[in-house]
Length: 131
Image (cartoon, rainbow, N blue to C red):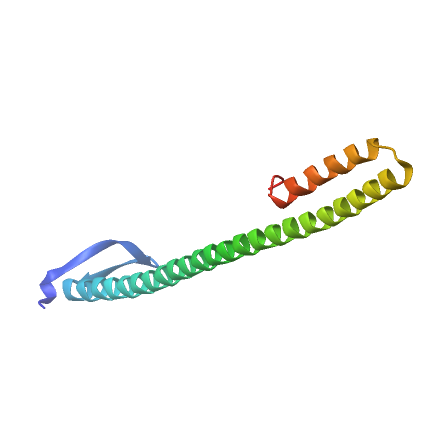
């Protein structure tokens, strides 16, 4: 470039001397700044994509965990419900046997009514009324 093509810049001041740059120097400086900013932009884009991918993977894992826990919870509720039903039905069967034996031994027919209601409750349990 031609030395006549120098432009004074308002800054920086070096001591009391005003620095002058050629147009070529300014273009080179601007080009370096653009390259640095492009490199920084590319790095930021990579970091952003990495973070987005991580969030996507995390959400996917959370969704999978939630589905698995829901399935496990449903299976556990069914298992507990079945265990409850079997336990209560066994207790009711024992009560039926007790009331029927007491009715035979004492000739007290009120025990047969109690046995009837226990039998009805056991049947309701087996049919799943409690679920």
